[in-house]
Image 1: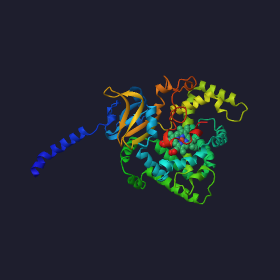
Image 2: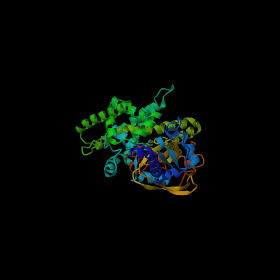
Image 3: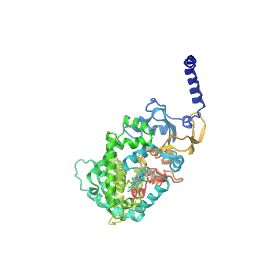
Image 4: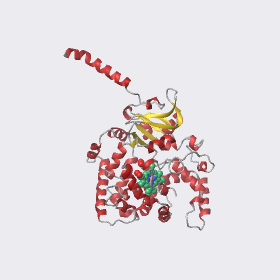
Length: 444
Ligand code: HEM
């Protein structure tokens, strides 16, 4: 018997494995065209996430393979890249997709479990509708005054070389805190602000180690994440600090009367959220300063446009102190162009929660030459909503999608069909149940 096992064991295992692999349904993603990958360990993740200039590879893939194509993730994983408007809308709005585990677990780690950024369904809708009152047209108008005061203070910065990015990040934080929380940044406490800066730095700093760690920990169960907070690494130390400060703040909030600001709504005793307005203000300030910094960069690179824009603003405002945004077409076009070219979130991963079929707006040709209008996906597969790539599709934005060209918004070159996203057919504010709450405020 032992003899038989010795002789036949290995061939039997090999036959079973071959049968399993050949009978297993092939992922539909494998039938799609896509760039070849030279590394099983990293797949395309280094080119996608670690390029010194965002999109150096991704935008070439977009040009070569169109809005929907296949990529390899780490360890041979199949990934679907999606920049097709219909498919993106479907993915963001369908309950068959969820945010990637790493995203949700990382948010839980920093903000505490049950924070509103990871809630789903009715609990999430309840908190969003409470927060919505802070974003009505009247509320948004009231924020303008605060922003004006902070902007005027910026005019006093020294005329020598200045680090505009850090200046802007401090200014947007100050303006957002005063507008949203009704208090200056300094009230949040130095420790809180410094720790949040560390969080932003950690999110922004990518490396091969981060890419591999993400691929590995995304497969680990939630209990691992709960235990991981005690690990002696810098990332977990920052998360521990955030949790500690959050708990401290919650204890203080117990003694506060419920007022009318957004913070109070989140501090409502019936509300089990640990993500508070302070966290929200910090995150909002980061995305706002991202847009303003890139706006300034393009103005510096295009002095002629800068002159025309300044002239429009001066002539429209004149002595008029109220904001006349609607009557400034160049300013509108400028802001849209910045949000189009520089989305703060260029990619958003989703995991397939239930097997489903993704419809496509534009049909594509498979690697076998067949025309495809839809893509079946299996539970557990990873789908990436490619926001930055969508915003550079020639079919939507005209012949020069990689160029800063605000005129495209004025001469009707941009896509005029069905609406996508909440503003100007852009996906910079994402979509679906977690669509940005502040978009009404982020654009005037
Ligand atoms: C140019 C400026 C902004 C951009 C590009 C932007 C973009 C985004 C994006 C992409 C998301 C989705 C994140 C995700 O689910 O992974 C988001 C969510 C959110 N944003 Fe913004 N945002 C901006 C400004 C603001 C401002 C000023 C506020 C508030 C003061 C704000 C409040 C929020 C909130 C509360 C969410 C979470 C919504 C939810 O989970 O239901 N945003 N934003």
